[in-house]
Image (cartoon, rainbow, N blue to C red; front, side):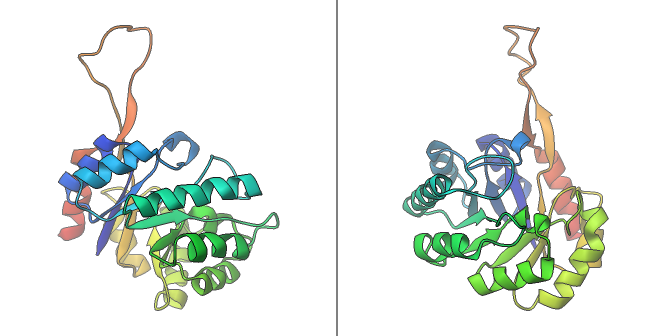
Length: 237
C-alpha cells in the first residue's frame, strides 16, 4: 500500500514525511488545482525529505489544452526536475476534443523525461472516452493514473475507479484521489481493489503570533500532520 500526500509548501511536505506518508506530490497554487512549484521549493524538499518526490508539471490553472509556448515552459520545468534529482513527475495534456494529446505527452515523457516515472494526473477525468484515454496513457509509458472516476470526488466515482482497476490494473497503477479522507480512505482502497491512494489532508494554518494587521487573514492551506497520522493509522489497521 502506498499513501501519497499532495503538498503545496515545505511545511506540508515535512508533515507528510513525519506523518508516515510513502510519497509526496509537490505543487503550488492549491486554489488553482496545482501548478509547478518553484526551483527553490523543489530543491529544499529534496534536501530535507527522504521520500520519493513527484513534481507537478503544469504551467497554469484551468484547462489542459496547451500551446507551444506552454510546452516550452513545461519542458524547461522537466529539465529542472532532472537537474534536481526529482523521482517522478505528474502531468497530462489533452486535445481540444477531449482526448489525450499523444504527441504532446510523448515529447515530454519520452524525449524530455527519458521515460522515468510519471503520473498522468486528473486531466484524465476530463477526457471524453476514459477507455481510449487509458489505452493511450498506457501506450505512452506512464506508470499510474490519478483519478476520481470522472466525478468531483472518489466517493462519487468509486464504481468507475473499480471498473478501471479491474480492466487495466495489471498494466498501470490506478490511484484514487480527490475527497480522500482518513474516514473513507480504507473503504475506497478495499472497494476499488487498488493499493495506492492520494490525499491532501488539507487544513488552514495560521501563525497565531503574527498579528501585524488583524484586518487581513494570513492563513494558508497545509497538509495537516494530525490528519495525515489519522489517515495512515486507519489504513494500517
